Image 1 (cartoon, helix red, strand yellow):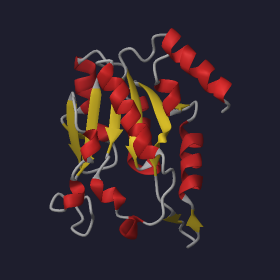
Image 2 (cartoon, rainbow, N blue to C red):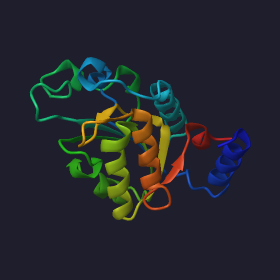
Image 3 (cartoon, rainbow, N blue to C red):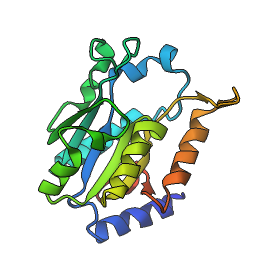
Length: 200
């Protein structure tokens, strides 16, 4: 999308007031995902900076911030609770309205119950960002939409890793991110960029 297109998108989102009570849901921004020897090559080196920008924007404007952490059941995983990699990145520190821990892909299937908390706070819209694009972020967006929430998916504030297909071929991380955006677009979420979500 062109710079002019982003400006139009951002102006529309803010003009409509769509982002005034939207919760930022940061999925699995955990140290263990920095272990590329375990996960393989990744895409989008700008992701961490974009998540930080969104966190700063949401906290400065006193909008709801939700952090989600994955507790892997696989001992060898860098995300296992016994691993230092299970920790959230230090740059996520700051005001947090809810911390959800989960053992599956969907942030709506963790503890505390994210949907119940959003409903109790009268929050109907969420922005999804984090790691990884095509697993926990995409699943969170799909489930959120199915539960009736309006979902904005901040694609450039996510990243993923190359992955082997069933036939043994490798699908690149950038291809997987493109497919995630295609899957979600106009069905489960509005695909946005970080700059679309920054107040004018």
